[in-house]
Length: 251
Length: 279
Ligand SMILES: Nc1ncnc2c1ncn2[C@@H]1O[C@H](COP(=O)(O)OP(=O)(O)O)[C@@H](O)[C@H]1O
Ligand SMILES: [Mg+2]
Image (cartoon, each protein chain N blue to C red):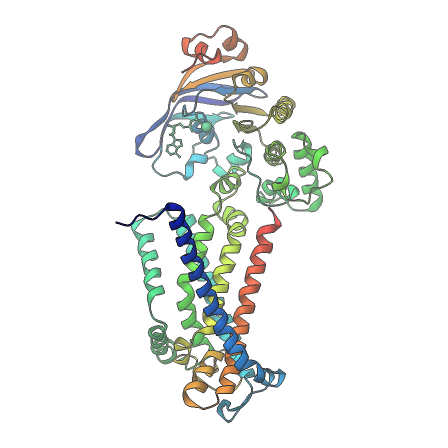
């Protein structure tokens, strides 16, 4: 079943600098889409459009549409704050809030009015278990999240997103600052999450895209150069530029 | 032209800076020691807990401590919500426009107005026009105006210093702007805001010109915000200019200095505790 459809989508920042042009793609439920591409090619911009984080910026313009379960996310029917609960986001640098581990994970549910220690305890445990962090932190939930290692912090950010029980998870180069073991743990978590969520992951690591994604997309300077099944893209890319990129001949 | 050897000029600069610093510190130490030496002998429990006798030539300063605390609390109870609210609005709710620049410029101008002029303004506006009379309230309102720019500026700086990505996290979890402000921005800015408040407390306690016109110089202990009251600084000023009770004046000055040093130390300690807690 189709979860997200991006149709003829274009986006420009203030002053008309075009970041995305005529993007067409769709993501099925319980599927992982891997987005690759060099810096400045509009990958983060697309993610920030998918949960309307771009709303806060002045002077932007867009074309085309993005639908979630068939409903246009930019239409008046969808409340942006509710959309962001349904479409969670994990940023490229882990951003733990200066609070305890527990309070970090409980932050989202509390925003949405979840009260009661028992309910929150459950959500915190659920989030931390799903992000494969529970065993490492269960005895020190009250300590500051800033004391965790970088890899743990990033999994905490994933846990914090999951505690809201979102439908879609957007990850923007979540492993860019992490060591290989932390990266592996995050990939492990992702493959388990797939059964429940729809995932879009931006990665600057083509091997990671090949490992974790079902579908892959290659962005270049705001253009979607190629999009298809990961296996196909990595074995028989249709576009010369994709071939160059994944075989490391880019630039 | 004489060319100095770089190593030598480095040394020279260092030496000059060190002496300037030493000079600054020694002036501070000198003033504090001088006032304390002169004032501490009278500064006993009796002095702190009784009222003035013979216009302050005898007795103590209890009513003036009460007035000082009262006026400062009133001033900050008014200035803090106004100033922090303005800072939140300027930083989180508007983009930089001509209007916000006007507000900032107005605050800067307000900061530059001599306190005696503010006193006169308070006298005309609160004491006479609003018929509040010489009172704790008139004094507190005037001091609130005086410290408002400080609170706005320090709060704004503290708010701007909160990393943007924390706001993004809160927004991305579905937080509204107000939720993000109250749960992420203000807690992060708290040490800076508290510093601004403490600075303001210090200025309120030490202010003379603005309060003598607005709170008056009654000798009694004020029992409501509509009563007149004499602050420690005003008492010191009157003792020093209108009486020959210099011992009492120094006692008052010592109490003032100790109060301000205590507040600053407390503020410093609190800030460090808040900042250390999660890092
Ligand atoms: N907040 C912004 N304001 C203006 N231009 C931006 C902003 N963010 C990104 N851009 C521009 O949009 C283009 C795409 O950037 P981005 O989506 O961050 O690419 P990527 O994530 O692929 O590196 C770049 O040219 C970048 O300079
Ligand atoms: Mg990016």
